[in-house]
Length: 533
Image (tube, rainbow, N blue to C red; front, side, top):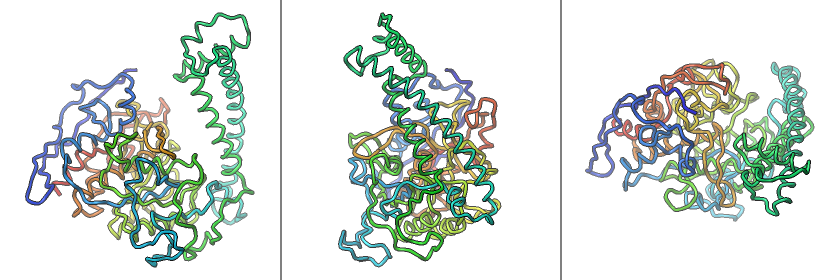
């Protein structure tokens, strides 16, 4: 599909990059020009491009990535940066992963597995971070916890009840529909596998079948139906089964008023009740992959011949397990942010969020604590296709649009296709409450047990920006966290076109109205701007 491409300009920052004692390098950014004169990509991405598109360059590669590879080849080269600790507040991280095990933060003041709080920071055996969830993972949504509490005096109680009824009915209907699709797809795949004596048949082989067998004829029809949507039967089977698993988790845990996943024994309404959890930051099961994926986007070891490259090359990942399969607890997030700050993190990534937050002030105070202590906090905008200036989305850094932090960055998501559909259909947005956009659709990164896969979400866009912030802090360590935020936001590429929002073709808005900056993050220009400061 060919888009109606319009102009976009690189910022024309020209600066001298000081990288090393007494030496200078003259670095020129891409000059301002009309991108309409540049050939833009209208073909599908190659596998190599798809696995690395967020690092590519709009002018050089005709793909709206963050110009990370260009920054390394033209600016960073062989220069050494300072180590930067990046805290990933998320689900568990596979710290044994081949692409992550060499980039872990290690608490040198803690003796592993001796059952003693050696550094007296309140956390026993926190060698690579802390696990605020204990052995638990499945959890309710926050508004379901409100209903379960029976607190009818809460001003949002009736809203929660109505939302619960609506969403539960929606997911019950979706489950029935997916089960019907799964029945057809699984049956067709089984019939064709039996016919060919193999499961890796091609669509060409399927269409070459001549048969009067009704079951086989139906299987051919289903296979072609899936192929028309760009997916094979085998792939469809996997996707649908994964979707059903997610739907069942939603119904069994997230919407279940009678379920409680908390196992740590603390009082969730007492912020002073601390020390709960443990030092095991790993996932409790393979499907708990979110944190591992996020960590890889930031810091997967670069150019080691393995599956993915992170954005930043001098990073130590501090793993903080605080985001369950459901909504996170405000207490866990507030304490996780403070843990990260107190233990040396200079950048924090938060790829989580929710629409109800009973202790939003605790988290907001922690975000201010990070700001006051020179730490950048990067946060995903959310995936409900909503305007977060209107719809509540937590955590945030403001009260009635008055900001309490100078270092908080909220990130929306873009796709790999520049044009009217550049904004990911799922991405939240907001002229006041979203700062900037970054690659977040089909981002290839690490998953548990030395595996890799593409995932989509503002959860993927946020660590991309956290990686750029870490890159700036590494090569320009004298910049404050507030200056790093300024660099990341102001050095982005402005998009002046109108774009489809929320995946709805009828909802078209100027890209400049979707965030404070109207820009997409660019690592190359960020380093140049940092050199000027």
